[in-house]
Image 1 (cartoon, rainbow, N blue to C red):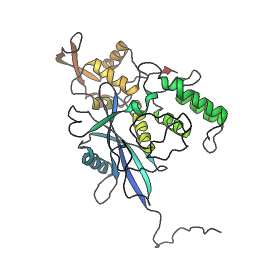
Image 2: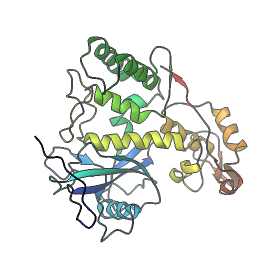
Image 3: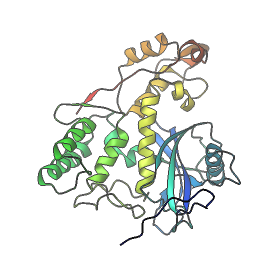
Length: 339
């Protein structure tokens, strides 16, 4: 019979397996009208391996978790972070980019950071990759992505009807089908752009994501699994990227974090293109402008931009006073796409 581990008596030391806290940042920006994220080389021999900036929390060196993450990002990329928020805590998958933790249980903290990519980033060794290269089903700006209709939806339906992949413990097939309908907008349901993490996890559970040679999938990859990009990134880091994009899509609707990605002065067209890039959908031009101006989010400046490829455009700036005027200032848009 296996021995039952008892709780320590008062005064006895508490023994447990070693635990390491891993800090991981999805640093997001907008480049050429597309969301992108900052990467670093993977610390192993995986060909074309990349990772999110990350490192262990060291209490002797870091006053707080946020401080620890900022120091790792600065050390690994040279980027000094501004806006930062914690996303989720993941404890069920290893993060292979951290050396020397084989005997430890990893508690992974995912963060979202927002910054502006700079023209000289590549020359200074900073590398940005497109978020939609890793999550192509999330970009609806040119209509419904072909990968959804031609690959993802048929595989998901086939997997459910054939029972070729397991549902979660305690979850019936009907419940899984309902989750798929809601997450992927199947059977006439509307596409909810904020469910990025849920869609990613459903695809991973179904074995539809090819193993990037650096993370242990929840389910083995099935025949026809999606090989999304030549760059190998662990499942754990791709999941953090998905959670960051979903959080940003939700956050811009009730907080003005959008302006962390904008220059000090911008045209309304540039602002709209940034929102569209984040949401992965196109917006009605006049409705968007009325929404922004009526919400008191921007103020016109006295400057005009002439090099627009068309008519000169008035420049605006973020109206910071809105933070004092109401508790939830944001761009309250919703794509509401039909799948």
